[in-house]
Image (cartoon, rainbow, N blue to C red; front, top):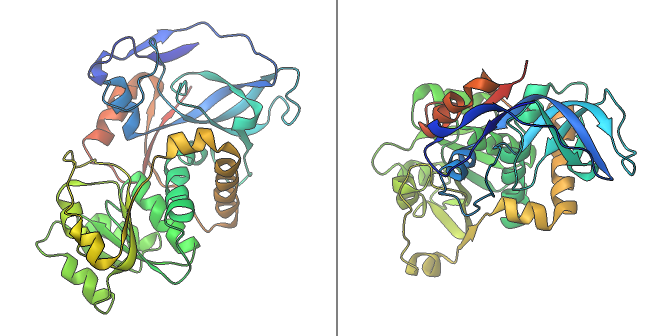
Length: 327
């Protein structure tokens, strides 16, 4: 099979499109012919050795896939050959390839209404966002949610999930087109967070109270402003630092306002508490089937162009989700 292979921790240009042998199935495993694979910011970080997890080399990136079952081992009885499925890898990846072998418990049946491309866009961003909002922030219907970087893959998923959970969503994005996109996907308000003192606009939208929950995958200057836009007993969700700068916080601020700063480490929680993580993803698929959320796949690339796909994300020039499509 063809796969994208990382043989050294270095800039993603070193990744190669190579032939790899298919591995035999162990008990309880399922082989899936991949039709689409999601591309995420952490894929680049891992390939470059800048992520907390350093997978053993050689390594195939990609943790979310969708495709068709081609083989099942003894002990795997839930799926049949030809079934359309979504797959979720552990930290070992394997998704940037023509096929993948996964334990049956890491595979989900796809509703007919969800395409392979959409399914490949679900596990990481929707999994991360629902875990952040449900398990970490314990967000309730009627609360106000501020989403930074709201037009990106994880941001747009959070906008949709926030609306599905009954929150009032304020989206922060850098261009008029991005802000318009967030409004079409469920945000009630969209603000330009590249402007000075944009937090004052957030406070005005909340009657001076501030927001209940902040979802921040950006960090940098956006963090410096957003921590001043949060209200009493709010929750600030730290997702990542796509802006590049890891910010610092004067701890008198959460003391004065009584708010929590909460780290969201989805991959560790997902693999350690899989039954809860699986239930979250089943909920997302159900909401997709009901039309309450819908992944936006804004760009697709052939497998051989995986480096170009990864570069499109690290440059922060894309909206929605980027996927690889197999022949």
